Image 1 (cartoon, one colour):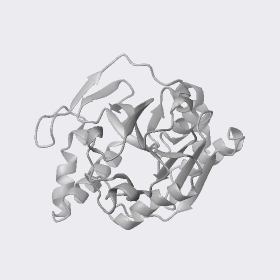
Image 2: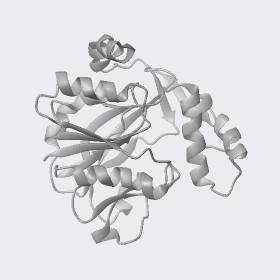
Image 3: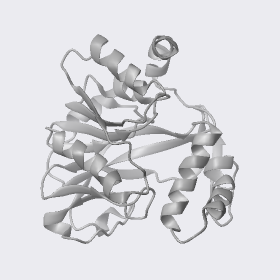
Length: 273
């Protein structure tokens, strides 16, 4: 089965090169909708990898609109433009800060289900600190490209996901990791992913959380959301069992994916030019 990685991208230079190189030999293609406001070196990294390593033309990035995440139609369009351009049998929302640790398993994902989940280990602070509570351990982020597939939902909302209009109609019910509740079969892809979601700088973490909270509480004042964001465990990176639920962080002896050591010096030179 041919799988197309898709993702809208804005200022993801920290991890996108490693995310690409981890899957490039195994994936059908990678479709990136790069927001025009991107200015941190992301474009330079993608261009560099294309020219040096992408001999089969798998990387297909393009400039999209510099959308506001709170403009839901524009946000959804960024995903759906990627879906429309993809040529695989399935699309996989692999965020640029996600590194696949067993990419050879991409070739073993079998047709049959309408969707597949990947198994996640999420990280904060550094590459050895795992978020043991507070983040999902499985994510339904691969969907067959059929039955009216489309992306829908506000940034950080409770129903942001892929949907199949021929099955779900205009309903957009999201059930998280309760895969049996979906009106279609969800299979195990066998793929494992390290999600370096909270290794970004403090300012970026706080901005992301503020945007999520503004989606969840649209009638609240902006200043209130900024204060809440500053106190969220995914921003403070401190254990918590308060209003945001249980968040635990644990230092572990984990294997860091080899793509980091292999390409670190090379990518840093590209960005520093």
